[in-house]
Amino acid sequence: MALSSLFVSLPLPIPRPPSTSKSSRFLPIRASPAAAATASPSFDLRRYWTSLISEVEGELDAAMPIRPPESIHNAMRHAVLPGAGKEGAAKRAPPVLCVAACELLGAPRAAALPTAAALEMLHAASLVHDDLPCFDAAPTRRGRPSTHAAYGTDMAVLAGDALFPLAYTHVISRTPSPDPVSHAVLLRVLAELARTVGSTGMAAGQFLDLAGASALGEAEVMQVLTKKFGEMAECSAACGAMLGGAGPDEEAALRRYGRTIGVLYELVDDMRSASGNGKMRSNASVLRSLGMDRALGIVEELKAQAKTEADRFGDKYGDRVLPLYSFVDYAVERGFELQDAATAKL
Image (cartoon, rainbow, N blue to C red; front, top):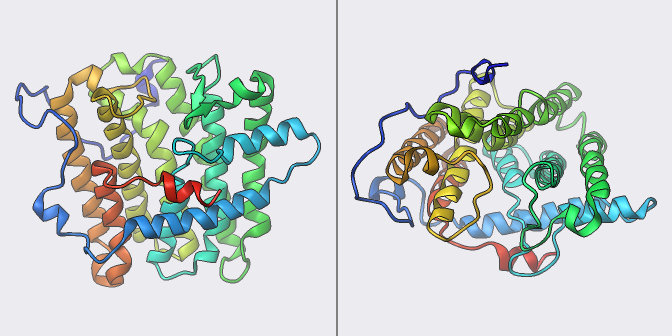
């Protein structure tokens, strides 16, 4: 099958020839004055994010008690609940994005928390499988042994497999329904979660990565990033939109916002790794294909796209849109660390 047959039309940056400019070559990338003024200085993203981490950790811990077979459940907890330590913290970006989208629309946080926890289970499962010897063969994850390194490949496969149905069960059993979340919305959320991790979602991204799409052009490389990383962020924002009662246009805008944020965050990670400040997680590297100058240009385009989508909500929802603006700036600048606050809650 040709790789091009799996590519779909998405609002990604338009491919351009590599720039020969030597300017703006080194990170950190700073927001422009106009962009920096978009988010209110009174909004404390770090406080908002870490408070949500605490609630999500509680959901996750309660959802995975140690019970027979203990080997599988220990491996599941290892994957989802990293131990304390500066490098062991999980940022919980998918859950935070889901809750922020839900709260933007005025719905209670309780409506989104079970799905937020389920998103983290799915995210962790994908990382467990991604780290396996047949894929990335990663010996560590979040500063400690990866699941297969700690428990063996067999237990890692089983733990990843078990996390998928646990995520769906958690949404069904813990979401307050039919009030405030209707049964119809609950079904849509479950379908969205399944689509995201399925053969046309994140699994397709892994396939394209393995098939060598990173050796092709910019469009193919960006498609790998979109499938591997944009899909989870899109799902997070879309589920929050559904749970918050979004209309079709609002849901579509939040989908585009989430997908753009997911690609932006991973691309900046890739650039940080090239500067010796991070870990390159994907074989599909824009830097290897086109160089730092074009990557910097794509970052600016993605940042503008994400803020354009956030702009759609400002007049109607006022300050509730501030987390969305702040996520964009954080994805680029990484202006604070979450480890200390997060690990204190584990």
